[in-house]
Length: 271
Image: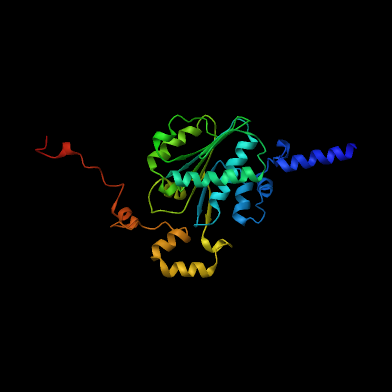
């Protein structure tokens, strides 16, 4: 009788899709397996075992970068009570798309923690954690602080002013920052971060390294797209923008730090 009751209780638990909180793995790599992501690319495995607080995913289209960001967003919220995860994107459509991946993983796990509120662009969990996905404008992000994980989707297309405004949100919490994008010209915060200091853990994933993208498809894209667009979208290449008259190299060559600045006060007859 006791065995029958135990089996009935287990059946009800499985039918509800319940997952005990104690089963949520603190290891992101194991957590990926729990949501069904078992066939990971080498760069994805490296990312999920990294503990770097600053990460750039410079990836081809359809490479799986948004999937990894969504996975890490949910993992942070589930395993760190009271955490705040912000997902920023250039537009609401992109923010909604990334959060939909978070929601999909949450459902796959069987709602391991109850959601006290659930919205199209965010959720509040019973452990006090929040995930908020926001379109990229300073008006929408002002007022947030103590961010534990800040994810900037399509970072190359996010306004630099917004990027500079959100970084201080990590100051007190010591939060993590992840930028994910395809390139978009040799300028802006993403380009500077990619070519800048050593504090970033960088991942470059061209389409040829993604087993889900066939060579036949890439060959079709090579024929259909301008060469610079193909290199930007599929080869992770920072290209000159299509409206740029002078190349970045030409501008850099024309500028010298050794030339003293012109001071108007030194010109005779000029007030």
